Image (cartoon, rainbow, N blue to C red; front, side, top):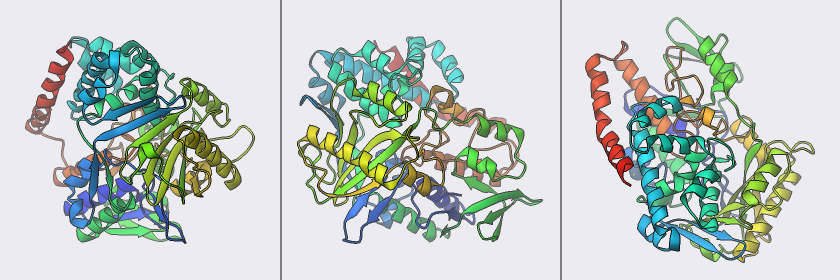
Length: 504
């Protein structure tokens, strides 16, 4: 259930594993947050995700190049531009990046090592650890207790303890805020490590836009014998003696041995007539929209791409006027107001310029309307254009705001499915439910609301598909030998993480 990139990824893995697969998507087109649209005048605009570094590994694993997917690499991960003209460039090479940071050179390299060690420890777990399990694993490593303290800290506190330059700290906080969590929120510390941990692998975008990924996944699914049905809105999931009956809007019923849902846990649970108590508790405890943050994407054609992010595969530019705008702006959003000085991600994409910012999910002055979405987009375009020295507000604008996202995703407008707060990270994503398996035999969860989370990666879909395939072949509990092999397979990354944590 769900024909976003996670649903399509899971479908391809399952079909290649010999399972008869139907992917059901409620919208008329697949892709979810991977959304490329061709306008009546022939212009191509991106309305969702742009960068594909997170999904590259899964795309390569699936051999999507065979289905026409081509990625273009670039050497710069991101450029941050401030209103005072200061810039910070983050290259694929951590050493080149640090060399341009002056007095913070050594401190930044230390931060990249620490970030790599932290994520290395996470990778050493065969399944997603809860924060308490992670704390136990870190406890006996040199510096491990302080590393766990970083996880619990606000992102801005982590950066203040690590670096001295306010512009560099602000640039990393702005990147961390891409997760739609204020950098002053307790438990956002892990997000401050995202950019320092990203060095070493090139940033990539697909030729032809993000829609090329959806096209390739659809072709791979069909080549493996799977089926994609759009306009197929699921209204009920019912248990049967042999599996499940899935009812669609209009009354059509499909029978299935197993169901894999990439919808969020609340929507999945609501489709069940009598969900198990553990599943119902997890759905009841999920928090989405508590911080009142929603993404606003703006695509504009008929204007040149600003010089700092020039080229269809140029770097993503993060733009922010004042160093304190992020702190104040998230406060505005929480109160239901537009940020007084909005920040944005900016990139050349499609046949124009793509921008992403944040707005309140719920406005204090009433519901969102198309006119209000356009007003919010205009504020972002004018603010970003002024910082980048480009007139972005004169082109043809396509806006995707809270109302548009809610309609597209058939949810509350949160593409992450839940707030990325500390109580809903790692093995608590979703809380109290060790996904991908659920307490209901034959029902699996994947997607943005399950570990490793939102964004464009497809990893949760691959994990869920592998679990389902394993269960169809070995319905009994894993043997001691298979559990030992699983644990031993994680030792190399665990040892690398341990060595990295010992580095002064």
